[in-house]
Length: 398
Image 1: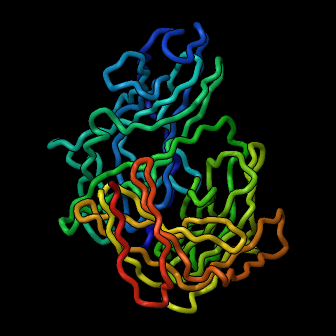
Image 2: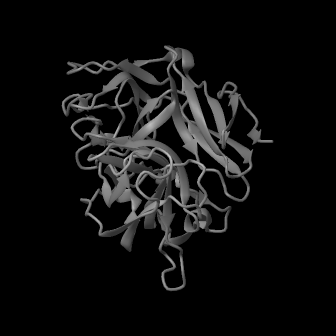
Image 3: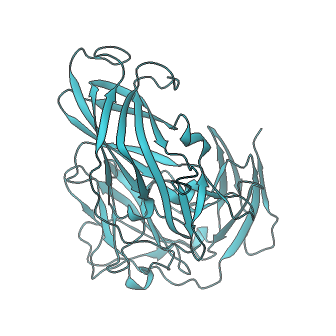
């Protein structure tokens, strides 16, 4: 799949009206009259095959109880004075779009809901997608239009302090085709990332200019336990990538994927709160080797169709990485992966490296496990030797 990245624009602050539900000291985690502030921003991961993915945000709601229903008391809301239409593809490479600030009673908040505007006759494209080479098309967003997209969180708002919260909206995984109808559903996939400092929490590096172009299909991610924590596309003019915000940690895995190239992996990448983690330089760009043999398409089907499917690979040192994620057809449940047969190339992180010594991990060449996820349930199927004919993979959740 090709990825077309639109150059990130500077974020502008939105006007808002803040309406706080629940009195001071009431509800879960209350601390009397002490209060703090939650500042909410949007960012995005790479998108697959789209020129634009637009969503119109009306408000953000938070509650101290993870089980609070839409009509329960105790909700606090950040209401945008004017609903804001945002092209998520402008929010890559560390760019944040600040939605506003919400004064809150100090305490712990465990539920957040992102409420989007409806597509109406007067504004039919409040939420839309522009597939590469195709016209703009409305996105159907039934769940987010009503009570809002629900996210479980665990965020402490200290008294007299501002807590920054980033809603990482993955446009690639959130847009789902509906068969051959030419229609698309919005199935929002959003990660909530709290952070208290912007001095660090970044992984910065450069890829070779040969894979930096917007049609190269290049994506860069930092992963933990085989789960991408933050992903982006490199700047097509400089090849730089900025992964931000990334929670503090000592053992992230950097994964670089590009069309026609092997998977490049750097293990043991640290992230601190006080300084950027710079993995290489413009003189030592990451340049994955060209594939020696053509990649292979892996097809399958998953039910229910709202499940997610991804391809995992376990490296020789035991590190698990996500190599690819497949969109699932919203009507039939069909999916397709394109996976390299060549071995991934890996190296270990070194501060201020004098060389980048990626070596092939030959023992795991062409070995993958497909994983389907539906709610809290997970199913896995190890793939056979991809050099031999194989049948489509079937997943069915009870």
